[in-house]
Length: 407
Image (cartoon, rainbow, N blue to C red; front, side, top):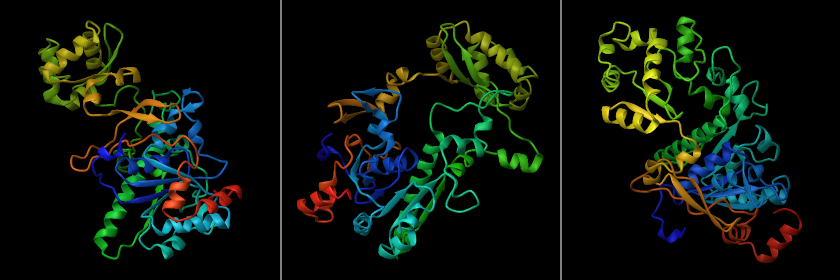
């Protein structure tokens, strides 16, 4: 993409240093970079981010997880375990607005780069710290992965079918949630810095476990007040009916959601079953919840008579919420996603061709985000640009630092 054609984005002028690897911290960095922040990703020399090798497919040894999560970032190498590396890092901190790190708590402190020391050098710095359990508490020093965070937060327990092992989705939900909360926290801290007048930064402390916990709806007060432990409910939510998966005549799974009274009445009309509206079993939201199996059977029997296209057309015309369970092959053909630029080509230097990736969320009308480039293919791609352009280091000095293994 020609960056000259990209309009100003909301975070233009904000510089972010990104430390850490895999998904949570880098996803935070990607969200900020998508909206114009100058994100400088730092990898250790000879030990690149493992995300470069993640993903279920590859082309010529290149994996596309990296293409998406490192997009719009500049990549440099730097060894923070060496004093020369720490000195260079501190010089980068001088001109930064944000630091995003996703190491195990205590790592920055071990290197003499804890937030208090960084703040003393740059009082306006916002430090986003993403970890498994947070920076404090008895479990803070434990390593944390999304799979465990989803489990200990109670989220995983609610997934799957009653009586069976709780499965995971084929995604690292806990990591992505933490990355999203970290990005929100960074924006809040930047806004507070501007409003406060003193331009003072702060620490944004994000735990994977707490990011999952935040999505549990009323599960906690339900238990605290009544002792109810919410249970997994398969393809539906207990007491919410009809709102489930129903199979079409051409073996597509369709979501039909008509639990609201007015929408249920429209569904009944579409199914040519107006009698259901006045049936005492289904007259209200609460009644349908008590007779969930019965109404699910009725809707399922109706859906099995028609193909997915017919179900969609009939229910959309009736004003009923409906949609197919799409594979990714279906998603990339979806006209709605296409119309809203949610399927965006990334020119990937690693393979010399465009690769389709997810668009920028959220959409802003005045200062839209954009995909300006895919993840740089090589560690240290922007060493000369960053160290020379920002810090003024000569080519000779850069050569010496590279030869010494500092960058």
